[in-house]
Length: 305
Image 1 (cartoon, helix red, strand yellow):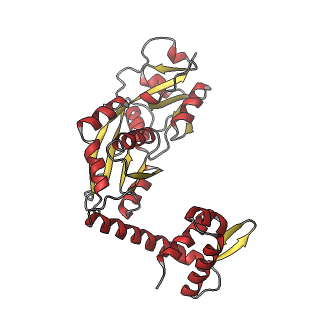
Image 2 (image 1 turned 90 degrees about the horizontal axis):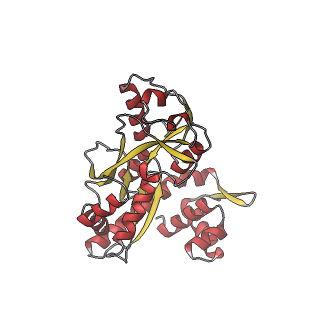
Image 3 (image 1 turned 45 degrees about the vertical axis):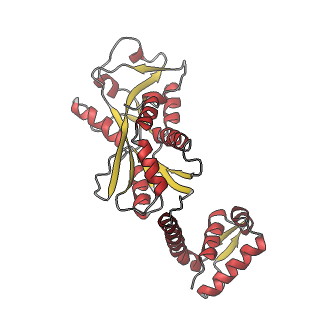
């Protein structure tokens, strides 16, 4: 029978690349890590799970084969522990969340900080990634809730709409579109553009606006990035026009906002959890807070409508 603690140690060595770093992460001694790996090798009947490559430990073929099973077994053991704690009335002290880049990285920390005012015992782990990846993590039980910028349209997911954030167009000071009053979207589409990555909800919204106004399906894109900071800096450097959340526009004398006639693009944000997920009282409490009057006031202060 495989030992879960040995599998956790195996994963720590895999992720850190050394027995010493794994020991520091786990709070073990280096000899203890070595002993656990040797014991695991005996359990699975292989001579070696790792081989040394320079200063790092790399997986052998046997280690690669074990890796997927180890991740699944450890995740299942952790879920079972959380489930039993919930049934015993013990509040889980650590919950795993994830968010999409940009506003999600600003919105989720603010929610956590406000929530911990009344739940100081709860600790959080937060990952950042594209929406499709986050939905996969949610379905697999790797995270308990996610903040994303697109409605999943899945019956297995419970959705709490957090609000909509206005999207604005910014350009470097001195750009020709900043010299007059309002400009048309057709004038904007003829300029070099800095857009989010293909497949993102905001990218689809922007391209839909161009199509509705008779513009090309493929605008003149000089840079694709999901980083608001990078997009704003590129716009300030004169690379092109960028579309960013209104409340994420840097306070800089190098940037101005392009006024576009009839411009009404907003980015929605949602909090999601599995509809038939495990019992998780802390997530229930966070969900309730996000939808409460105090939660709504916080979200509005962050610029969402």
